[in-house]
Length: 267
Image 1 (cartoon, rainbow, N blue to C red):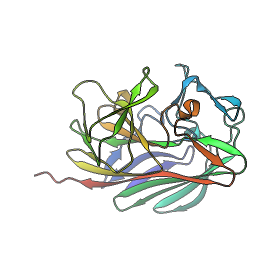
Image 2: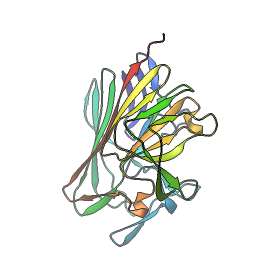
Image 3: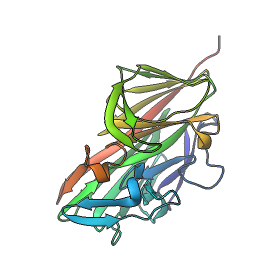
């Protein structure tokens, strides 16, 4: 296994296994259209980009659609703390005046071992309290007949509009298959192992402190990948408070994911 990582944004540009791309590369330069981007201090969208914490209101930068999306850790400078042939440890302060005025220190350890890839983050707050809702955005390479197998039924979040959950959930399936028409852009509540099967590869995904995942295979997946995005909290949790993580002074929050890959022999 070989991983290519950018120091700027702690962004994993590509991962190969036996010379084959198993993580789709971004073809347009956007870090959430390929590779594996760290989504800190929050994953997915915040409605209108604004949130209230401990009685004070804050405002993140917004996109043209009028919301904020995927945080900013993927676009800031990280310091390399340690690097070896099969691992790298990077560190940054997520403090951003007016948007996120909290000194949350993130240490991110990325490693490969045989057929396994992992990213483990530790978030540490120097003082006070701070909200945090981290995620990652990996695009796994697949063919048209992919299938996800879960240990038990997941809960699928109902939507109040195109982007945001209503707060209600409906029981879904243990096996999630590629659609013949349309695509997934859905939030699921599920703790447990995730196995993604294709005709050539099997990915076994494990998560740390991730009760949710987004499933996406829309436009930017390019009909050849599936994003299974581990998340600690549901979409828009900075505004709703649903399952939001609150760091206390001196506290460390671990969060991460790993996957192992197996080649499936053709009969």
